[in-house]
Image 1 (cartoon, rainbow, N blue to C red):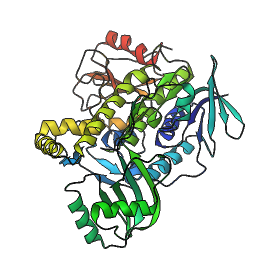
Image 2: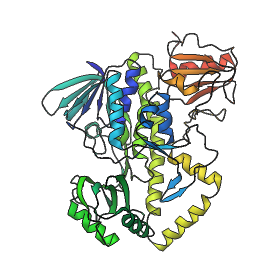
Image 3: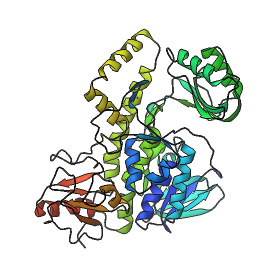
Image 4: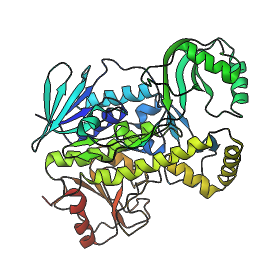
Length: 474
């Protein structure tokens, strides 16, 4: 019996495997596809995901193969300059195609000892008091103490659990794909600019060497949404909206997506949990989908490792649903709003212009930007200091910086007083005494995911808080 089976080898499942391996948890990742598809629905990491990669020492790998971008707002077709006072030391995203993200996370997962098995389709999931049994399409069975379904919108794991997936079906559909265009770049850019004055769901992004990422509204919602569109369908829709198909040819991949919006009622059923698109689906407006899944994994990893290792306090694993379900619900809400703003009706255009004007105010722009980039997330840890429940931005220390101390995935007590102690929890929490830390508080206790669990300078208060997140003292 292994410790954890992760079903799905996309960004969410790979990130979870990396997190679990930091704590020595045995992980088997089962991916249905024998080889990566090369499809690139996700186009990059927002600021919070950039922070996450930095917290685990992975950011340099992404920056080596990606370009930084800095766009504020990014809401319903509205873009603004990055707000001046955003609460992050990483005020940017990185433009990383999804296949590159998956390659980097795969390399990391294998480095730390995850067992990645491709071409393994899960067809059955059963759990009992002691573990979870997985039936594979080839007739074999595997057994684990826990299982996490990261297997996408049509999740087999979710269906096997019988977890409801309420929401709204797709009402509009958009075609997406990478292909070559025969038309020259200047003509393509001019036509796209003209079409986008009225149709914001249309676009052509140059990828280099004549290759473009094309987005165009579909004629309707396909009966079989698993079937990719044809090149002829793409060309027809391009001519419908742009008056030309740009000489589109040699498609690398073609796909379609709709505006369906659904969320699993529960993220945990006993020893089985859901993350990423298996737990929530929504339109890709704002580029939040891949990031939301990676952040699910970052929240869940250390908690599930604690349960495997036996020190998880009561309620810790359930806090994954308690914290992440509301986050997912808010993303569903903002993507619904954004899809409305992408419409072409006169009232919608007027509303978009009004919101654009409001976003010229710094405070509004900052609020929207921190919502889309997930920098503004604050979990409900009760009343207290303004930092409580928020993720901690990177801060300079007397030597180095905070995020460099977080690569191991442990808790941290960042202590400017030098008077506090984590005795009894030193196997789970690092004590960093630094009087020069650029911290607007005497001391903070950080969970492994970087969220602030306690703020103060009182040993009794700290000692009372530690068991909530890190279990009983050794």
